[in-house]
Amino acid sequence: MIRKLCLIVVAGLLPFALTGCGSKDGKAEPSASVNESPIPDGSKQSANPQEAVKLSVLNISEYADTPEYKTFIERFQQKFPNIKIDTISVPHEQYINKRNIMLASGSAVDLIWGNGVDQFDALNKGFLMPLDDAAKEAGIDMSKDFGNVAPEKGGQHYRFPIQQNNWMVFYNKKVFDDAKVAYPNPKVPMTWEEYATLAEKLTNQESSKNKIYGMFYNNWGMYYYGYGSQLTNGKFYTPNGLSNINAPEFKRSMEWMNDVINVKKAAMPVSEYISNNTDFLSFWNGNYGMVVGAQWYAQLAATKKDKFPRDWKAGIAPMPVPAEMAGKHMNWSNIDSLAVPKNSKHAKEAMVFAKEYVADYTLSTGTLPMYNKINAKSYFQGLADRLKDDGITFEQVEYLFGGDPNVMNVEEQPTQGAPAEYEAILRDQITQYFTGKTKIDDLLKNVKQDIDKVIQEQKK
Image 1 (cartoon, helix red, strand yellow):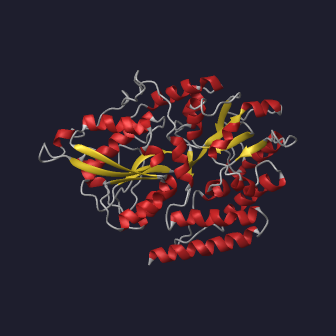
Image 2: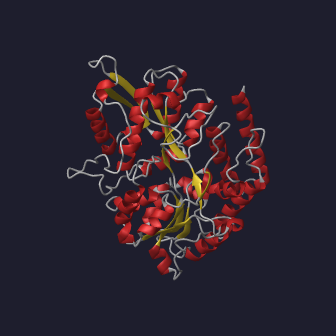
């Protein structure tokens, strides 16, 4: 299926050249702000210095087919000539099926990309090996080099963190100006109810050719249950490991979304969204007031004005919170990562590549890696410089893009039992509620039953 976070990655790789990360020929260079770990050089990767190790790296084509990735591979091969990279590029809509087939059949794969749902799904299916020993061989400390990243299973790390998404409100200043509405507070988050009221004020459907919806959203799970995730502190499961999707907090979240779409008429109907093939890029056509999105929207605002020309300026503000948490800065937390399948024969070399991927390639795409040896201040300043034409300041960027130590992170999506199926089942059935074909209690009952069935089957 076309997974939400696979789509996020498509936007996440739209690059901008950060200060200190680009060369005159347009090729990104390793950032001078990275303090190198004691990684063995390429000539020492094999007992025989003439023998090269070939790594098979499975990644989505929206990453692997970009100029940024290809120039990164060139830099990597120069630095580590005895590690040859064979990248297996798969379109995002085919990626999970391809991954499952390859790993279940025992194909030789040394490293796989995945978002939180993807990697926990692979871990639950028994595809992954723990990384700590191989990482140590490669000069990496999994417990220290990435901040507070807890082990996944048995005190071991199974994911090599790439980045954590940081969510916020992006808004169209022209829509606000035309509606004579004040911009959102840059530091104090709105409540979800205030956000809905504001979206209603911004909506203008008088012209069929220039219809303005106050709120844009994506047909992804967190837009339906994310409000509830904040209320439950990201608890998508009951104590016995079954689905918690029928909890009152998630019901409240979906009823809120229904009110915005079908009562306030402040967002596109779900059926229209699907029939129009709407995607996350649609926000940039100028016909929407606000969207809750992660840092990948900033990369579009900063660098892709040629592909997404606009005569309006964008602004950023904290993402909304429930009324019970008014004033608190919250974030839907998800970690993209790399992982090593059990059948890999070159785990240490895979960790060498993973470290370079995070410290070099990820930064060159305009994303702040979850890597302590990156100069975050330099990153924030580079992004602020790119967004200055929109009137976005360094202080706003630092606060919203990962520089607030007091931000409250809650799970963005379910990541334990049957996480991929959990998301898919909900998204496949949710339209029945938003189109009036079923009541919310009946929907959540059916969704829970279907998810629980898959969870129990996977436990066997």
